[in-house]
Length: 414
Image (cartoon, rainbow, N blue to C red):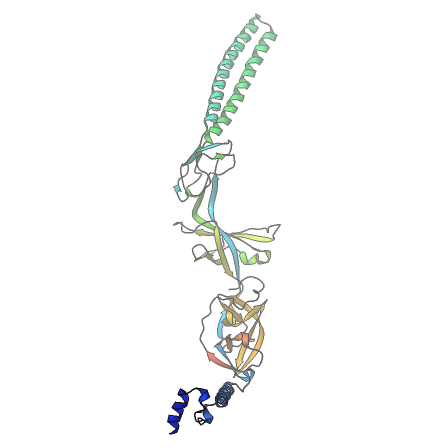
């Protein structure tokens, strides 16, 4: 019996039969220790690979020693002239709030709305003046009665004077008759004055346009109760618009009449050139400012009134300057901090500025020569003496205040 048959017999017999199966040969690579050892080796190999990979990606050079990428632009030769920019109000040539001046009553009709063209004397609104009409009628009838009575007394006084000359009446009677006639005449004049006043109240019930113009505002509708001095509508004349503004007293000479100016209308975003028309001879006692006005002809009535405008005028003579974009520097007071690039090194500089205009800063050519590369992007990561790799980029000045810490002292230059 070979081993295979013995194995089969042993498997079929119970253990008490005494027949045992032959022992299987053990293989070293199939045991539990071998499996554990293989797992440990795999883990060690994975760890070694991860360490090698991490070492390969580690930068052995300090970041501080590497050149920092920045964008530069060369400064430009330009000219600069100080300017004075003030904020004012664009007002109509004349403006009126139309409403009752003598009586209080309910609004009966309002015949116009904002934007309507009106002529001088045109009816704009009416009031419900039945009470005023009745009072006027009563006073008129009372005056007519007094007038008739006074006429009769005057005739009687005249006849009494004739009788006095003939000796038919006493002087006392004649004087009393004359006094009564004079008193009635005075009473008549009083009633006529009351009638005139009442007539004015009745006239106040019909509100008319004081001049040719346009309706600016409509404040009340029919049914509202209005008091003397309250406006129902407003009328403006925009044939000439007045730019009104106030300047510090130190700029009195700058605001001389006929000085050319440029006005920017914020409502329409348009610029208008016009000279100064008039200047107040005295400063305001409270603010110490000088009031001045600029007349702007506007026959087409294109400028909205009671809106904001900016008036700019030049001060002094134009001078040579160096210009850079405003975002290339940080402004603090009357100085600006920036970085100049010499070779591959950035150098910090704090220079006095001549002024600012529409996204540009101006410096004296002695402080910042034209053509000097200045950093426009990447200033935040730079320090004095840092090495840089500069890429030049032509940048047109734009209005930006990203780096502005505080606006320069004084007025906005131009």
